[in-house]
Length: 395
Image: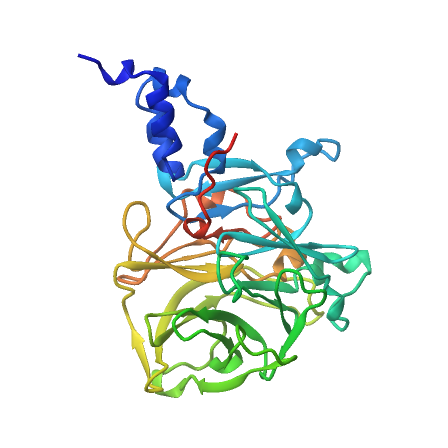
């Protein structure tokens, strides 16, 4: 009788070629020595995870002349106890990065080119330069670290750039821009008041929704409207007094079923700014979240104390929801530090406000020893890897 370790290489290769996810390949390689030796382990670097990955900052200890290591990035997987993947990612070297649907949107001085980069397949799509944001872009290199962090959000209407409804939407400073691959310039989206906190594309409603200061929510048809600039119209304003909220210091927005939006209010404490401007920030941390549901059909607000069997991921990425189970804890909010000023202002940098918030009891725990991972140089961000197309036949 043939044992598992005696299977011929052609059968093992057939099995390995049909594995779609990183975790399955890890398990495949762990069966026995013969299985590991028979497989092309390079394939594993190009497989998405079933679960989100956390992309870390560039290694601050990298020597200037170590170009190879300086153009690689570390990714922490929620699976397998938070194992580290290291991928070559020269497109993100010394670039500002935000993410959506598993893609990175990158830009950097001095030309402010932008491009979409898939860190798993190494594919890229060039986008228009950011010259449209004349009042936001400065070319003083001494100020680059500050103004570079003005690109705070990126949202893709689909994970597939080849679809006709695909749009790239960004928040740069106080400007919202949008484009499609092949466009020569960014279009503008106007019509809101105050700072923009977050935005989401509701797949069922086929509309863009934006949450701004004071919990004001706006919408527009970004997929079909051909006018430029596009104009947002106000849908609702969060009734703060009704729910005992003195303010809406920071909020996130995500599609919540067919007819609803979920707005997540983040409560921080200890965040300070001295009187001499943006130079120094005191210690700060997240102490809780409150979640509110807005019905697009009836226009009513309600507070929810449970996310059910799902988890929400927030940070320098478009907000997204993942079904709980496996290594993703249901009824939790996975958050990273998305206050960009402290990365410039604090001597030790920003990035320490990272963790997992349990909606059931309000406890916050670290993300696989996150305090030791060193996020201080640049913001970590989540990659929604399960939405990345599976790359087969990689050699």
